[in-house]
Amino acid sequence: MPRRKAVPALRGLCLRSLAGHMQSVWVRDYSDRYLDEYQFRYVMGPFNDLAGGLVQELIGLLGESRRLTRAALHLLLVPHLQELSLRPCPGLVSNAIGQLVAVRCKSLSSLDLHGCSRVSADVLVDVLEGLPLLCKLGLAETQANVQVLSAVGSCCRRLRELDVSHCKKVSPRALLHLAYDPLAGALCCPALRVLLARGLEAPGGCDMAAALAFVLLALPRLEFLAHSAVPDALHLIHTQQLGGAEAAPGFPSLEELARQRQGPTDRPWLTLPLRRVEEVGEPFLTALCAVCPDVEEVNAWLGDAGPDAGWDGLRWSRLAHLSL
Image (cartoon, rainbow, N blue to C red; front, side, top):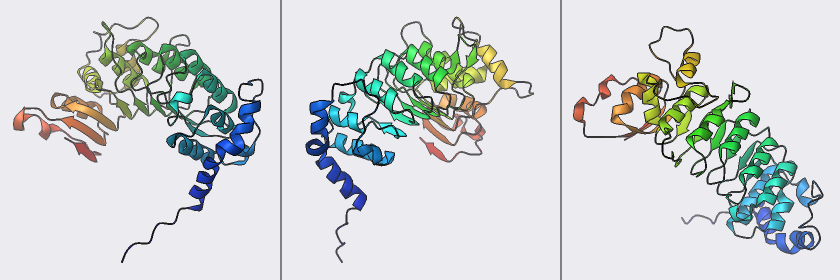
C-alpha cells in the first residue's frame, strides 16, 4: 500500500510561518528605527519569550533559505541563548555582530563561528573574554591567531571541544598558547577533550609534530586531536625523542611536560587518553598502540609492508572501529 504523506510537525510549521513573516512584521520596524543604534544592551521583543533552542532553529531556517538579514540577526541574539551557530550566515557576521554576541549572549555554552572570516582577531578575543561558560567553540576558517588561542586558554576553563581547522593564522606557536599560559606559568584548557586542527600548516622552520606533542602532553583529558601530523607526534613521545625540539621562550620543554605527565611510575613510557586517531601509517601503529592503549577508533593507511608489518603485536582492548 502507498505510504501516507508525512504530516509536518506543528513545531516546524510554526517556525516556517514565523520565518515567512519575519521581514514584513518584525524586521521592518526595527530596520527603520533601531538597526544602527548600539547604545542599548538588549532588544526587547517577541523573541525574548521564545525558547533558546527554537531561536537557534529559526536562525538556521532563515540562513539556509537565504532570508536572514542583519536586522533579523540583531533581533535573534537574545540573552537566554545557550547555543548559537552562525555557520548558516557567515557573510552577515561582522565585528559589530561579534560585539553584540559578547554583550547580549552571556549564557552561551556553545558558539560556532565557522567561516565568519569578517570578524577580526581583536573582536574574537573580546567575544571569548566575555563568554566564560563556553563548552564548545567553533573557530574554523576564521581570523583566529595566537592572541585568540591565548584568550581561549586563559578564559575558557570549561571548554571541551574546539575547532580551529583551516585557520591560516594559527601557527604551531599559537597551539602552545592554547595549552599553556606563559604569563601565569600554568597549563590551560584542563577540560578540553576534542581539538580539531585539520589543515593547519607550519611555516618554514616550525615543527608541527613537536607542537602537537606539546599539546598532547599538556592537555590531560584530550581524547581526539585531528591533524595529519599526530602520528609523528605520537612517535616522538613513544621513542622519547623529546630533547631535539627546542623549548619556546616561556614554555616548558617536551621533556619537562613528559616528566610531569608520567609522574612516579615504573612504566617504560607514559600513556595518553586518546580515544580516536586518524591518518595513521603502518610504521606508526606500534607507537600508537603503546602510547594510546585505550584507543577506540583508528583510521590507518595500508602500505606495502606485507604480512610482516607488525599487526600481530598490536593489542587494543577497547578498539571498536578500524578503517583501513
